[in-house]
Image (cartoon, rainbow, N blue to C red; front, side):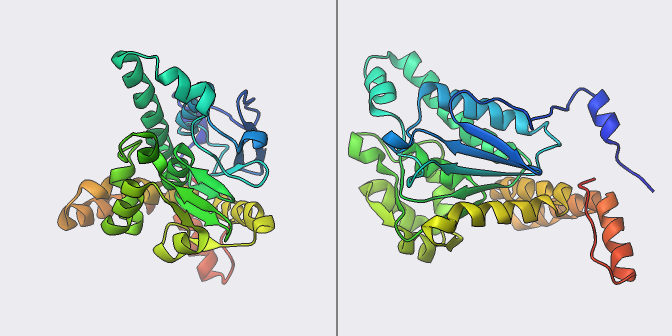
Amino acid sequence: MKYLSGEASSLAGNHVTLANFQAKHFAYSVTGQVANITLNRPERKNPLTFDSYAELRDLFRQMCFADDIKAIVISGAGENFCSGGDVHEIIGPLTKLDMPGLLRFTQMTGDLVKAMRACPQPVIAAVDGICAGAGAIIAMASDIRFGTVRSKTAFLFTRVGLAGCDMGACAILPRIIGQGRASDLLYSGRSMSGEEAERWGFFNRLVDPESVLGEAQAYAQNLASGPTFAHAMTKKMLHQEWDMGVDQAIDAEAQAQAICMMTNDFHRAYHAFVNKQKPEFEGD
């Protein structure tokens, strides 16, 4: 019995196809149902600009409606992930803006994190080399992080005279590595080594530099072949339950799980188990 219809969602006007999306300010490709986003200015350690911030924000917002994308990998070109906001193209101009202009910028950067957390696809960051400032935030906002021994992650905002509370860092980072460790990084702005990041739980695993992107893509492909509606529900509940008490979270999960039990993937898994076969999930 079919419960969900892709045609119905398309008719409802909440469907886009992103396999052929043409990015202007970073590299973008799709392999299978995995979108690959590559920050692509290796000569400068892949810094962000006003334009790349905005395009990333808009792309992640569209991911909510893209049923042809089941997982996302974000990485940096060359031997670095991202050095943060470009000193000449962002930091310099910011010193000349008035308060309304500054607020529009900081709200835009925060909207990127909101969009990454709100999109249903798991986001896997492949982090090598420098991962600093806004680059560290993008890695933090991802769902899974693969790193290398030579990676250096720094929430360096205090080193340029700013607070460590940028783009949700004070809310999200303590939930990943703990309040004390997050306080250390956000006050000092120091670099966290790859081994330290893995030990503290910021990186899910460490791999060789030449393998980090491939490992992240393989992980993403595995998720993309799984019950992607259920993955989206898991991501949604992981995010929403930050603001819930335990009893409220249990009730919310009961509703979420009942919804998943209505999916075709749940029925496919049952019939495959009965027939001693591996289920083939379709995400509906």
